[in-house]
Length: 164
Image (cartoon, rainbow, N blue to C red; front, side):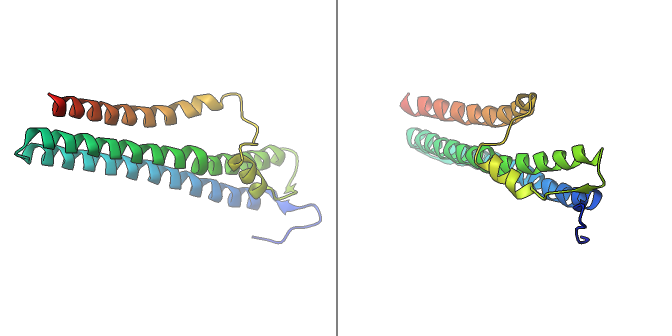
């Protein structure tokens, strides 16, 4: 990246760096979500296979219920990491990127470099929210809630089977 001038950093080069960082956080989130979903799906499949192979029906269903409870706890932990940390990193990076884009309409140089400041504010929950931010969050909530309800349903069903 070129050195800054008295006017600041060349806006296009700074925008490229900010974009790279935002995309890095986006990639981390996509990998976290898809790998967690894949792990849950694989483990549920394995649980189903082992549940059918047990001789004692009640013990098998108790083990399945326990496994679903563990998976639900795992899923909640992934949700916490996503919503309380990784997603905030992305929001801070995007906020800084949008600020550079906004200033690029009027200036060829940008001052100051503030991506870390924006990311810090987002992680601490101090970043101003955009008016339509809830619409973007709806998809994330649906993703986690659907899987959580499925795991909870598996736990309840397994527990009911163990008790009958």
